[in-house]
Image (cartoon, rainbow, N blue to C red; front, side):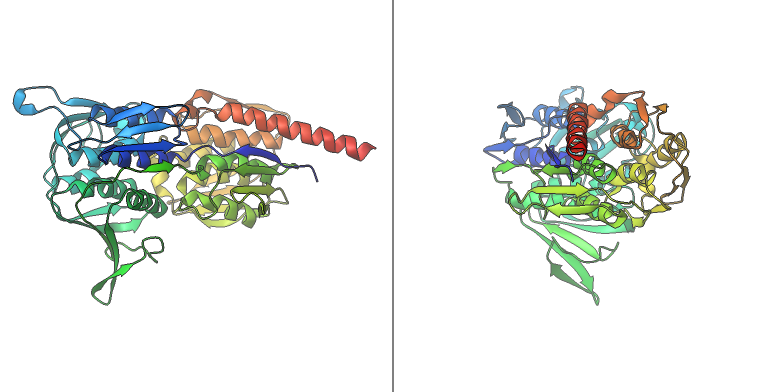
Amino acid sequence: MPNPVILEAPASKSLSHRALIAAALAPGRSLLTNILESEDLERTRDILARASALIQRDGPGRYAVSGMPRGPLGHDRRLNLEPLVMDVGESGTTCRLLTAVLAAGHGSFHIQGRGKMHSRPIASLVAALTTQGAEVEYLEQPGCPPLHLHASGLPGGETSIDLDESSQYLSGLLLAAPLARAPLTILVGGRKVVSWPYVGLTLEVMERFGVHFQVQTLHHARWMDVDWRTPGDVAPGHLRIRIQPGAYQAQSMAVEGDWSNASYFLAVGALSTVPVGLRGLNPQSLQGDRAIVDILARMGATVAWSRDIPDQVTVVGGALRGVDLDMGPCPDLVPTVAAVAAQARGTTTIRNVAHLRIKESDRLDAVVTELARIGATTTALDDGLRIEPAPLPSGSQIAFRTYGDHRLAMSLSLLELGGIGVALDQPGCVAKSFPEFWTRWNELKAGLAQECQAQAQQESR
């Protein structure tokens, strides 16, 4: 067997956002390392700085953050000043997390974005914030940015939030809650809960920065404390989180590797004759996209953790087969898994991801359209996809649309493993979350070619 090609995992985007926000809310100076540098993170850093945090870059991925002395500050409308403009770009994470955090501050803010951001929903979060005294005016489409926010702090008490569309609504409220004047209890409502692992990441960062909270579930009409890392079945109406007011505490934090962006390279290992390893991944990570190794194993690949390097995992290819998956906890993996499924044998069904229609693109329809270009029969379901592979048109050069969606661009590249020439209309859209993707991708392809050549030479002796 060829030697594995080993790459370093990029930094976690989700944890980078949360670490920067917590550090910006903590009085004193925090040192953050391995922060992802991408367009989305640039938007978060810029808004935190405009709201009065001091953020200084001290080398690649290294930031010294001096927290806001009085919480987020905007312009005072009593002085007839225009609201402070907060540009979230195309970052849904920035928009939802920081809208809640800014509502815990004081002043007026104009929150805007670009691209599809102005059609991505935020009404559920705004509804919860208005119960806490925030004043919000939608400027274009009701329920979506851009919007004017006037904040006078959060009083605390009780509120509820539904997670039908996004767990980021709850994460934003959680990050803002320690700034409230009294304890805040947040009830999880709605009809279903999506992307719950991201809430775990939020709580992990909050705990690390000294915030006190209780996660409780309803048992026989009584609220009982549970371990936030393993809350059990998270059902609407049966879980609440109580956050105590108090300051975040400045900390040093190194951000772990990103399972979402690692998924593309791990998938290459499953599709290739050469194993691929990623270093810098936490095997006990709370990131929901850690599920990629379990999914690839179910599809027929072999997954092995290094005995000598505890944060290194290697994927070895095999005869891949279709599977039936509930991907509600890990929706960002759907394009990756779909590209692998199109090169497997048998039907793959992906369920519980209806909220992918309101991402940077309608990812369900986009996957259906783009996989049809290679002959796969892909059907959009009410809440997911069904993928039925067909013989790949190896040797063909095919033009694909990315819809400006970073995750589609990176996942469609996996079709190269089937011998397809992949031409993307907007390859630069990966800068949103992983600006170095194409450099890493070319390094990986060069490593695969080198190992294949070495193996061929060895077999010919």
